[in-house]
Amino acid sequence: MLTILQSDSRAPTTAESPLLERARNLAAIAVERRRFEGRLEHQAVHDVLTGLPNRLLLMDRIEQALARGRDQEVDVAVLFIDLDNFKVINDSLGHSVGDRLLEGVAERFRANVRREDTVGRFGGDEFVVVCEGVGGEPGAIEVAETLAAVLAEPVEIDGTEVHVSASIGIAHAADGSADPQALIRDADSAMYRAKDQGRAGHAVFETELHERVVQRLELERALRSALVHGELAVHYQPVVRLADNSIVGVEALVRWDRPGIGVVEPEEFIAVAEETGLVGYLDRWVLTEACQQIAAWRSGGLGSQLRLSVNISARELGDPNLPRLVSDALARAGLTGDALVVEMTESALAADTEGALASLTRLSELGVQIAIDDFGTGYASLDYLRRFSMAHQLKIDRSFVADLDSGRARDQAIVSASLVLARDLGFVSVAEGVETEGQRAVLTAMGCTLAQGYLYCPPLPAAELEQWMRQVLATKT
Image 1 (cartoon, one colour):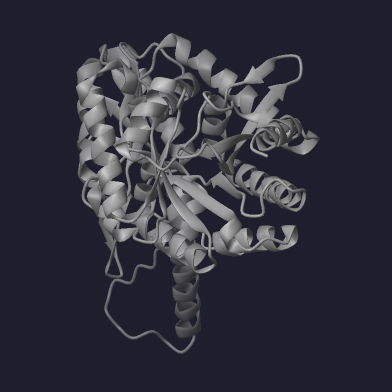
Image 2: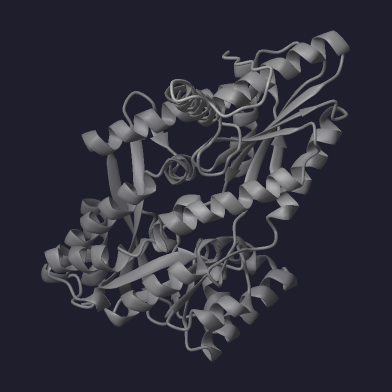
């Protein structure tokens, strides 16, 4: 501290002026240095993009909250929030839009919690909310529902409405007797359960969830290894014309026989692939392998018009590079676009409508056929059928086909209405999961065009399916 005391007021002398000027400069440097140090201290514990507390400060706030919980016997809840399909938005609309979406979401969260609560950005598209004295699990659930509700309205960015939802995991410490790392881990585990339950929801941590997360991490590690070491295989299921039982195409389905473990169900490892971003590698690998195989079958006398159907995930559907990747795979196999059918679910269309519309329009221009898969089980909006007018096929989900021959009027009415809708809109109808002659007969009578299922043939490795197809062709000659 520098203090200069002068009893009377006067101008500085010639000798004093340089000293005072130097003192002023030193004081200005000291003030600016302190401001700079303050900015550095703030940046060290706050997220640069959103201004929210970062992971370091969040962990400190959780530790402080737990300490007060122990002293004052109040509960502490941690909410772990992960934005659904954020990578799709980032990839399709650009990182600048993704950043502004994060800023908008952060502001909504900050404005809709109590003053004493802490909202922080944990990293990427993950946020954490720390609540004290929230009133047990019911109170924490109420907070989660409030935060989910504020995302119901789209975020407007440069005139474009961007829709986003979140999966929220809740971990609760009744009396502060918990470890900060464990509380975050448990909330993260619960968040994964919320995603497993269909996303855009919340789940409360239960003890067995931790074991499931450990198993999920191990499955992710094994899946990465499987992709590198060639443990995955493509199986094929024939698609048959109901009118004459002729084979018109095959659907490519990925399978995994894990060494030392056995067969891993597709629903299990594909969910992990989607969550971790591996689904892009998986989709591209299946596309490349299957294109080569269908080209070999076409040239080998199994049908010059044989079509290949492949499934495309929501994440890949929004990728603007998808049409180029498909075009390259077809070209390498010596195929034209009309050899391929790209299948996507209604849920995939809803995840990024604009990105999907752009990709599918371009694919259709290449001659690729588009199929809406599992119709009636996802976001069954007639608006999607109107907007995605380039689609060629409508696939009726197996859940509606299963009881067709049991006389259940409701299922028969749903399938009949779907087939009429497909016909009137100019779609080719495809029934999935046909397993009995009774189902086949009902579908044929209703005017369904194509079918696939165990009645004809299960998904088989390429060599086995080729043998099956040659036997079928031999019986027709």
